[in-house]
Image 1 (cartoon, rainbow, N blue to C red):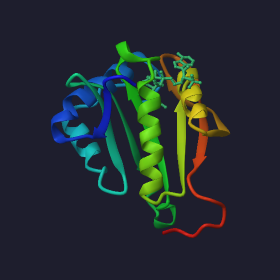
Image 2 (image 1 turned 180 degrees about the horizontal axis):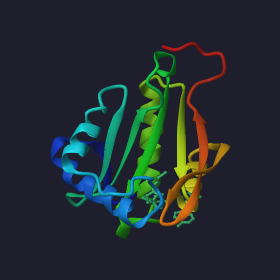
Image 3 (image 1 turned 135 degrees about the vertical axis):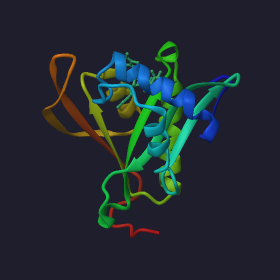
Image 4 (image 1 turned 90 degrees about the vertical axis):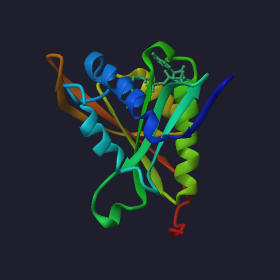
Length: 172
Ligand SMILES: CC(C)(COP(=O)(O)OP(=O)(O)OC[C@H]1O[C@@H](n2cnc3c(N)ncnc32)[C@H](O)[C@@H]1OP(=O)(O)O)[C@@H](O)C(=O)NCCC(=O)NCCS
């Protein structure tokens, strides 16, 4: 995409990442958080992004227009080759290819980092996110029915998955 670059997030990006996230908390069912996240909680959340996990930002003309991350799937050591993704694009920049650029970068990073597979848990009725993940090779593998409740509605979670290495290939 013209003029949009993806790079690893730095401390100075945390405020704008939080702004994008909290807009989605208040106005969408993309996340089951119901109250805006505080800066203190956000800083704590950001500490999980030590390798092999990663927090990326999409930047255009010095502005953060989206962010995406690979975070732990499960705390138990047997899950260490599996990761889960999140992608958030600034509301005025959606449907313009930024999400695709970010998810593509996550898939490449995830493969290089040695993950076996990426899971996406897509909350609410979110055709944009389902389409985004489909277009990057994620397959729908399940549906958790009515596990969320927000804005007075019961909400499903669609589970999607992308494999990153071949069957029977041992971890690096
Ligand atoms: C979901 C989200 C990350 C997608 O990013 P985006 O930059 O808007 O999407 P892109 O422009 O890169 O489009 C990616 C694909 O989704 C499709 N898409 C985009 N917006 C869509 C919409 N509103 N409805 C249906 N499909 C849509 C595009 O056509 C494209 O498909 P293609 O590759 O087959 O052409 C973004 O809309 C967003 O931040 N939404 C709010 C937060 C959120 O829902 N995050 C995901 C949590 S799981």
